[in-house]
Amino acid sequence: MIDDGLPTPKRYLAILAISFGTALVVIDGAIATVALPTIARDLKVDGSAAVLVVTIYQLVLVMTLLPFSALGDRVGLRRMYHYGQIVFVIATALCFFARSLLFLLIVRAIQALGAAATLSVSSALLRSVYPARHLGRGLGINSVVVSTSVALAPTLGGLVLSVGPWPWVFASAVPFAIISLLLGRSLPPSVPRLGPYDILGAVLCAASFGLIIAGLETLVHGDSPVVASAIIAAGIGTAIVFVRHEIAEERPILPVDLLARPVLALSTVGALTAFMASMTLLIAMPFRLERTFGFSPGEVGIVLAPWPLTTMIVAPLAGALSDHYPAGALGGIGMVIATVALALLACLQPGAGSLDVGWRMALCGAGFGLFLSPNARLIVGSAPLERAASAGGLISTTRMTGQTLGATLAAALLAFGLGSGPVPPLVAAGLAVIAGLCSLARLNPGVRNPAQTEVDALQPASPTK
Image: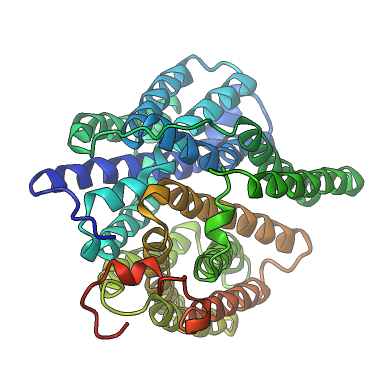
């Protein structure tokens, strides 16, 4: 199954359109954190309540990515991509009318719906844009966009707050949406696929993710373990019903048919644990650096920066390598590097300086960058072309779920008094080991797809396969 992608220069315009759309989603999810104290003060609410501005955005994304990816197949990928950006722009304009936290949370939920519609089909669009032999390179470039946006968001938010009120923080992502819409005509035309939409599956999907994550958050931050446990139990029960329902569906919301392929199941579990590992460390590390090592907030930002900066360099290289070398080997090597780096971070002694922390963070960034791009390439490439939207939605959902669970895990470690020591990097190292084992297991011919994986078929001349 060979797909030649778009011709140049139209391909480059389409890449820019998708890159700006991806930056829109990532920046808007991360930029709000710098504005939380200002929002709490202006809306006269507690700081803990203001954190909901961030968490509701992440929660709605996780709940709706898979339903939107399935809907994108029905209405057309490009059309779904544009609809999401239009909804996002409209919701952002409503931020300027927020006079209460409740209204702002509703607006943020609508923003997240628009962002989810855009993000859910972006990987599938990338597969249509790039020639099959360059798919890994394309996903590597997309990883650079994500890393750059994560690094840019706090700085951009601080600059906006220095010259204007907090609603402009959310509006600062609107230019990315406008540029992406203007360039969006270069994207492959929408080709809707006929067939009924699984409405019940979409509701069960959103309820499963929503209840489980909300229950975990309540367990960490709430006052009633009984209520939290009941919410989690309800979520697990709903998830069981959801999976059973999806098995009987011809076009499921949750791609259970794809996850039945060992290579895709291993890739998904590996990605989930890798994202959990990275977020656990990145959330907990600032507390350790400030409380144990005496770093100032400014110094913390500087020593954490090598992670995304190194990922920006390594991810596209890893993506290009995955067009020629097995993703299992690249990912395994990446997780070995990350595990060593995380263990070295756990072994930091009091008195360690910025350089001691910085090169270890850079090594972490290199390891995760070497894992994530080839892993995403294998998930998208292993799915049949007509299921690319489902595979892309699976990638985005796995990333958001892993990051959310990692943040919850870090909060739990902090709540138990373990977040300021070596425990978080050791926990992250354990998760990285699991991701590495999942990656290496894909080298076993016994776990490959029936046709020696679709990704092999996309690479007609690779001596290493």
